[in-house]
Image (cartoon, rainbow, N blue to C red; front, side, top):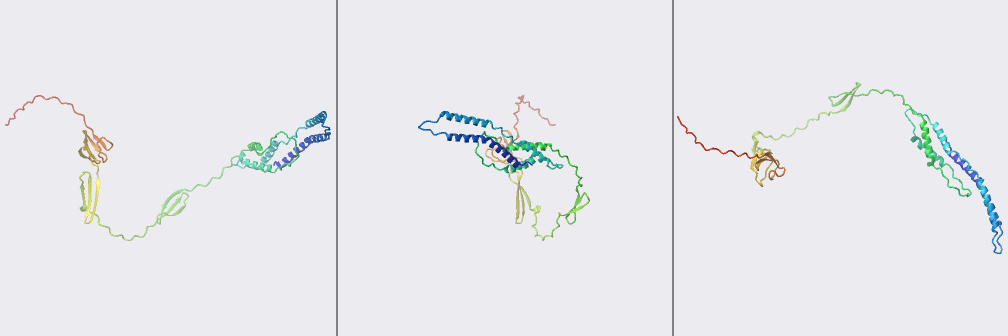
Length: 330
């Protein structure tokens, strides 16, 4: 397993050693320059310092600083983090137990485990202690968990792709035949008895209740009507029949309407017509479909039953009348 804590400690020590060796000559030069500046004699009698001497001293120090900077060697080579992560991931994948038949491991299954482990190890890296202030350098790039994630994910996918595809498992043992319904019958007690296809019978309980106890005798009903009590009468409208049942103080009357066709003559304005009435209007016969007082042809209350025929041709003129021959009686 990749020991990120040890890796961070080793990397920090290498960088710290290189910085100390590189900055030490520069610090010594700066200290020497400060001492020489302090050793310069103070100006007297209002005279300025010897500019030539100052210029020569600064030139010497700048040359020394340039030589010290040129003497700085290249930065030590840091460990190959990508190779170390790749090697650690390969070791972890190799340590995985072989996949069982019918189950497979994907990158999505390993991703949460790898990310959690990387976060835990990075969190264990101790924070650097404050050192001496150094010379400002160029802005560098820092590594975060998000920087490592693509490398780790790519390596995990590569290693998982190398895993052998699980083979299909062996066929299982055939199951027993199912049991179906062969028949059913209701016994005398109202219970439902079913017969299964394996010959077994099951009593599913009562489905038909037993007859209840006889009820108490009811009161005598009234005598019914006979044909002698019946009468039928046709109303004046010609389509309503009044049925009457009368016996003593009992009397029932029922009206039954029949939409029979009744000719009501020529249509008269303002008169009400009922369904089934027929009238003559404009030489045609019209049938009333619903109660209305509208004129035939207006609205949907009338239907044309017989259309008026065309006028016949004029007949030819007859000849002069011929008197009939007298009739003789024998």
